[in-house]
Image (cartoon, rainbow, N blue to C red):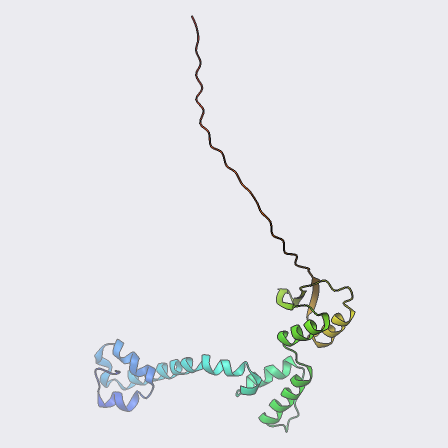
Length: 192
C-alpha cells in the first residue's frame, strides 16, 4: 500500500512506483509541493531503472538474448568481429552466433571429447592462474599428442594450460593406535 497520505497533486505527479514508496517516508508537508514532488518522482524513476537493471543485465550475458547496443558491441569486440555500417542488430547477432558456433567449445564439451580420446575421466579446472586452466586426466596416458593438439585447436588464443595426468590407487589399510596412561609418584626417604 503506497502513498498513505494522498493528495490530488501527488496522484498527478508521482507516476513512479519507487517515488510512491518514498513519499511515505517523508513529511506530509510535501503533499502540495510541486517542485518537491517532481524531485521525488525523478529520484523514483532512477530507482525504478535500478530494479530492472539486474534482470536486464542477465540477458546481456547470453548472446541469444542480447538486446542492448553496448552489449552487442562488447560481444563483437571479444570475437574480433567488425560489423558493416549497414548491418542491423539482428544481422550482427546472427553473424556472432555463426562465428561462435564454428569456434566455441564449452569446458564440458572439451572434457567429453578428451574423455573419449583418452579413455579416462577428464576434468577442466578454470582460472588456475592468470589466463590459465588445467586439464586433469584421471588415469595414466602415455601419449598426449592428440589431446594437446585438440586443446590447442579449441581453446581461446589468450589462454594457456597444463595437462596433468594422475593415477588414483586405492588401498585398504588397517591402522592400529594404542594409547597408554600411567601415573607415577616419586618418594624419597632419607635416613638420618
